[in-house]
Image (cartoon, rainbow, N blue to C red):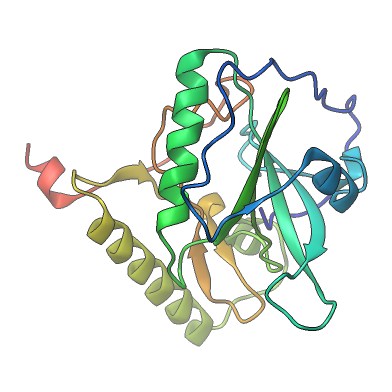
Length: 224
């Protein structure tokens, strides 16, 4: 996502994906853009390691910053994107990924990171989101010398609350996800946007190595 880009010293990440175990997702979400691997490879400068975005908490979710043509604009403009790498090694993982794409494509809100499209080819599956240039809230509190004004903090808090309220409205069951500063993104005007995935079983991480944080639960669930 919009986390801080920084050069990596470790070996480049491998793109040796396991073959998909089922056909690509049907075109059920017409507003989503279906990318080819070639497009995303070019957009992210061949997935170069210095274009990799790592979560600040040590999570293995990996995003590649890139730019694509804005198909909604009449002028030949480009927009910044974050390309999320997905690892799938079972039929269950494939089905979870497909359900995630369907779900993300149905919902849109100013305080939720916008899902733009996906890539699903023989050996690769990736999700494409808008890129938030101010990065994560965590970075602003712990990684920069910049001090956010009181008015900006209130604006961010309101945005977070509006995003959470929206997620409540689209979930039939009690909402349950990690509400952490590294999942709260900021645009250039400090509008808060939540990076949200529908389920915790999408098998999007290469390995389970996530530092656990405060897990947000609805009052209804807390009472059960």
